[in-house]
Amino acid sequence: MFRLKRHALSALMIVALGGSTAVALAQSTSNDLNQAAVTFDRTASAAPTRAAESMAKDFSPLVGSEPEALALIQGLRTGTAVVLQPENAGTPETELVTVTPTAPMGYGNVFITLALAQASLTQAGITNPTSAELAAALTGGTIVINGQATNFQGIMTMRAAGMGWGKIAQENGFKLGRVISAIKSGNERVAQSIKRDARAERSASKAEKTERRGQSDVAARGERAERAEKLERPSRPEKVERVERVERVERPERPERPERVERPEKVERPSR
Image (cartoon, rainbow, N blue to C red; front, side, top):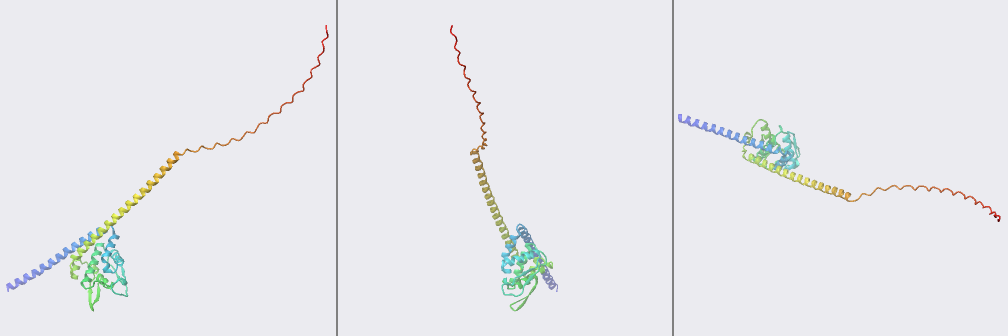
């Protein structure tokens, strides 16, 4: 009897330790994922648009297209409702589906949310989800798969209830290791994309400065040549105004010559 009780106690201790170990492991994994999200946010803050575009490429198979994935990412980021377009889904649909975020998220948590939604759909055997199936994975709902109803608690709904990422993974029956690896790879792709953009921007700026400098040099050479030409060419003297011709002074008339007085005849002198 005592031996039986001791075995029962040992079994209870093993179960307790196993449970606490699982909780500790989940907590550790959740912390790792939270740190990965913080790192992703720090990287994305340098170029938010580039980060969103890079994420859209990663999740375009999940959402249906890059533009729709980008719209969903921005909606989750800002806490804005997003209408999923049925024409981009894997199967024909007739009704629009709206996904309403519970609160704004950082880019890191947006990445984790979509990655976990994708994992839950894949686990259910859905690799090309419709808009309704994606909405159920995000916010919760029941989806009929192969004639059988499958319930999704919703990643965003569970997160809004205060669950950590590790707990959410446990509830859905999958590990976070792949999600951590995925977000780290996504972070690396975003970082490399930002670096490429920065290099391209610096190259373009350098080329523009060189072009402006060349244009400035050409203009300066032209100005110097123009000044040199002006210095070499003697300036034309100013035209002296023509002095008007002085009117000719009339010559005074010559006075009339007086008439010659006739000399008196010579008187003959008497002889002695």
